Length: 281
Image (cartoon, rainbow, N blue to C red):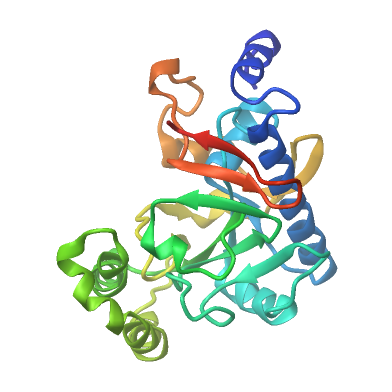
């Protein structure tokens, strides 16, 4: 973890208490606490991923400038989570978005736990067609033993048939009416066929169709252990430093302030008159 004085300086600059970004992080923390509770009650496994894991190890909580939250789940547990949560709104403000609960959801390789009392404003056609657009916890679905050539082929198909038509580029917008049909073909036929090429290697890949190509040895991830994040315990990979080294390389280094940026978005809270803050501008 970084020096406490530097941590205080970063939080004062980027996410001081009471700031909109800090309020957003607190909302996303409530999503993570909810997911952790559901997973523990139902014996499902998840682990902190991406910037959330980096924040836990390096900062003891959110990276001060971060405005999203990431975890991973194995596919079998993710499918059970979909069945448990369904399409209901939980605790008055939490809903799970995926291909089963929302036809316009753009990816089968992850799902999103979404806050319904906020709005994450982006210049993104794919995002703006969603029913709920609030602050989020992304849940990346991990699969075991997917060969790299199968992973690349699945990603290529998803990019051509789904991601590109849903981008803001006008020259491919004419393919948008086919996106939901393409999704059904991929989900029901293509991806199940590709999973038959699994091998016995103890590696974990982001799900077929995901743009992320990183592969983790299973022994780095399992058995899971607990790690403090914002003074609460959550599950993380067994060797978090090795996991981060695969994902980021030199993860311990703090980027220079001029190279720090968040997603190009705005955050709006809908339950207090619509407080807005621009992020990354």
